[in-house]
Length: 555
Image 1 (cartoon, rainbow, N blue to C red):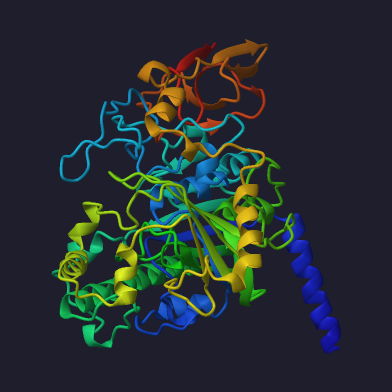
Image 2 (image 1 turned 180 degrees about the horizontal axis):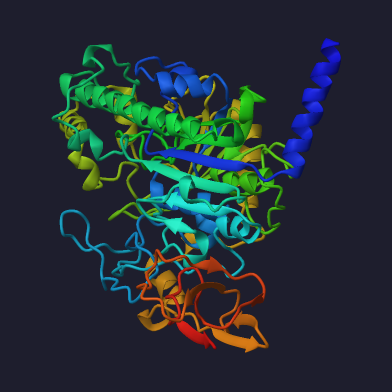
């Protein structure tokens, strides 16, 4: 009898996953490595995350594509490596909606007022990256198949979020607004653990004692450093409270066991030699996925790249992911074979430009430095708002750092190879060790293989790349939408190749002000409409300025 019950459960779960469109919720935090109790670090007390983890699939080998948010978030929303679509430089322009006229600055300044230049010495301007025409925000595929998609609120994709990507994209976006009968995909972004909170939260009480925090070997041990590390762990506890509130709300709405929940961080930790780095400290992240009723809970060694999140959500929604994307589904109907490696990119961070590529398999990390003349440590002005960064720099100046602490400041070499199992902090470069010659040759080939069928846009000087994206320094604009009404059947089209079209229907006598947050729908096919309404439509393509709004009165 017991075997029969188990069999029925397995059959039910299989039918549920193959035949339904589940609700999917993303809980996204910022700037944390797997420094959580369910990864073995009990410094921060996180009862809400612990409870979620007890019912979740926990992935031990999940990696961002870059150690900073903008490029990583572009990979998340597109399923593409930043270097393969031209979104690898942090940051390209304003994190704004593509609405109306965007006043991008002609030049970019760092946080000290210094002009930012590319590797060729040319000034860089703000821009919204124009990515290859076959690439879309994956949420558009969800919307086309009947999902209601909401994002609260951060985008930071390196391009302005197109209207076609979200039903709601603002501070009020919520699954609660989903029309009856529709499944939802909802994202909530939490900034409690962002790098800036190290100094912005300095007047809040520390809930983790500085004397209790673990210090990785690349840090000196002093009060300034311990205080900042304790502040980060305290911020993780603040995050946990927010996670508890959203889970409570999901339960109160009766959605907890009808929703697949993802929790992850947008890249690794916020502290020096973590954020912006291409080591595990910058790329490795926590990731867990909870299925209804805790199905499939356990630990998994599967290699997961941020490029995999998009196809995985599509796969869970029973939508076949496009073949053209870099990522592959690790769950759901269209699950691929487990990946063997992940790829990392490191290019411009604010005022410092470089080009570094990485390959990580289950045990080894390979790093290729394309500009060995540039320093390993980059003196990014924004990072020096973190008190411990200045303490480390002062100790470096005084020659008071030990070998592990000084490693960050050493000259670069062309290749680096690390045994992450035996050297978890990547402090011992094995590239010149003859014992690892075979491994080096094997993983070196993998680094080149990623560019076999695509361009590495990091090979361009950024000013030249911008000129290609924005000819003559002008942002391209989508052509207006042509609205046709043939005996009540309304069709929409535009001359801009692969542009997406959004439309809005209002009564003729409506006084509603049309904004980015109006009830815009994604156009997928002609529709019928009775007399007495007005159709508004606009076209968008990623990186392009939106078209002017077209209008047709049906009377």
